[in-house]
Length: 572
Image (cartoon, rainbow, N blue to C red):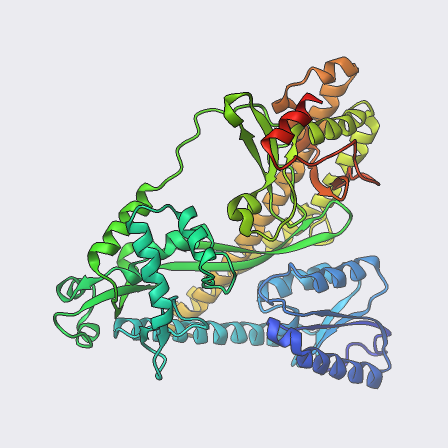
């Protein structure tokens, strides 16, 4: 690695990253990276301010806890260099290298890696930039070759081996075909026969649980959606040889025996994209989540892979028809205005839904109950009881009513939320937008130069296509980041509008006017304040900017289990 400056940097941050959970658990790769960085820092006489690592984080996004920590330290000042073992440890996307370099330069910080080949000269930056693009190009080519190989195998009628085969099947010795797994297929047939007999998904779930049949994921309770997807899956739907001939190419059809029955496993049906995003947690920190986007491809791009069929066609068709007809009726109206709809979260992590009962047609009772427990009923391990509306809505309103009568507290809390939402790239949104716009302009200039070079015969048209494809990938990343930035700015602006609306609504308002608000109006205010309420012990905890120091509590909180107890409690 070339020298960083004439005197050598004094204060450095060491950064290491691994991209898979397996590497993160083993710890070997992280330890190896940090050890190499420590040795280099000691050899150069640098002072290590902090060692930052990102276990199990992808390099295709900047939304990482460790990288956010590095950017915070750089923004605080006093950092000469951020040092990584390889350039792709910081990020695998050249566009993100550009953003980080621009961001760190404003604080007098440089980015360096042990595998740098250039220096600070324009030629050196060009060398490293070319190496970044070559690395990205090679990864793209590997991914493309892998994708094309999978498509080729699918067209030949071979299945793609995954960590777990579809329920009811196992892989053959070669790993490119499915064969029936008798114990699991017997369960599948049982599910189809129960559905064909007219049993709903809830009853099928209860019978499987009573029989001790483990779900495909190994749990004791089958998820309702797993049952529906299993029955509607073309994998178990038998088709004749003639029907398969309409779906398969010659190579795949040659593998089948005329007169047989076959199911279909669809390949290339969906495109799934996963990216990491971070959001303010309301307490000064950030929450990191992986968001998965699935988009169904056009029907003509699907590839059918034949699998052995096992069940009678009549049973399968009857089961599919019953499941498709077994839909929840559309709700025409709400029984009441629920103040906390969508705001209560069970301690088990599930949301709490509204519930109305009318035992013996003698009056309605209203509750909030754990959606997971309602879904799995007695088979659920969550022990959070249902909560009567009278035990939670007045408590939350009393707390929020006090907030609304203190406009300065509302203003300060909302401004804190706005500041946290606008905290992007450790700088202003306008500055980040300019950086990304400059990158788009730079890509446009490169595109023009490449086209001129092709016109003059300096590069071939094949090379032109490859370089334009690389530029388009970079532009796509930049456009995605600009969209994400616009979303964060919009959320901050919405918070600003909510703040002004709340202050306007509560200016000079009397306690009596507040108490006259309807349930829907109170719910709207709670959403503006970004409240989240969680049952905890003998009370309720409110999280976020307006969080409570203790629990909101007043008397018995939980609903009783019997209708008689509920009626007696209501009379009291």
